[in-house]
Length: 314
Image (cartoon, rainbow, N blue to C red):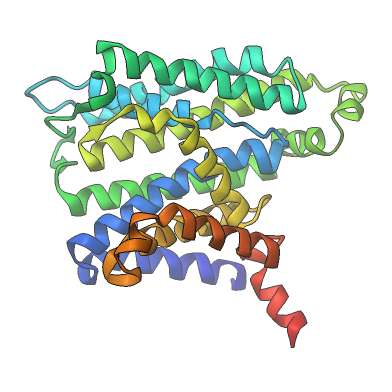
């Protein structure tokens, strides 16, 4: 019960927040939860399997673009097929991307995943398919019976449900035989192969699952903002989500959620002139970078290790 107390309290706060948070606050928390899903999807690769992927934004962006490209121009699309379609689109590219990149290791794997992401980026950036540099708009949000994703409150609860689903799924995976095999691959892939495990198939399955979850996050962001552009697939976005899990603490699902929240809130704080002034707000990347360096230097285990650090300090 003690282990469940904190998650249940967090769930209750999320459920009640739209009643007191206002439109801006609700939109900001929904954005944090979407990026938490994105960070959790990468955590499956980096923290569980030991695969440092620098092209994860491609899967995020493909899910977002699929939400816009598959939607009718003037009628709301049924949510029941839009969500699986966007997840499938990201998962399909993850299968193609992983099938080739997982034949390499180390820095070569990092560079090939980056190359795949840049390929997808330029498809949407340089062609009419994705509207070029201007991006494209989602004119009508999807619906499902009485549910309308155009309603901010209803969309907030959809995002909350998606975060709970993602967190629960990854928690089950980590406890399963499949998850234990991924952990073994992270520690010593050669030993796992010698024990009879088909490590390539395990890594590819993890890559596809992570890509599908990233596509889910992309779909939710496209529906929330009503707009997508090629920057969602850029290497900057891949670097940002990697920073989220480092900031929160690699190897922990809670760390991915905490890191996503900290990153989004810090970015929002430093980019707001009323908080930090006009000059610093204009150069928010600089102050955010220094802050992250300080966090990593002082908290090598991430924000999730802060309580232990404080206890040792006492």
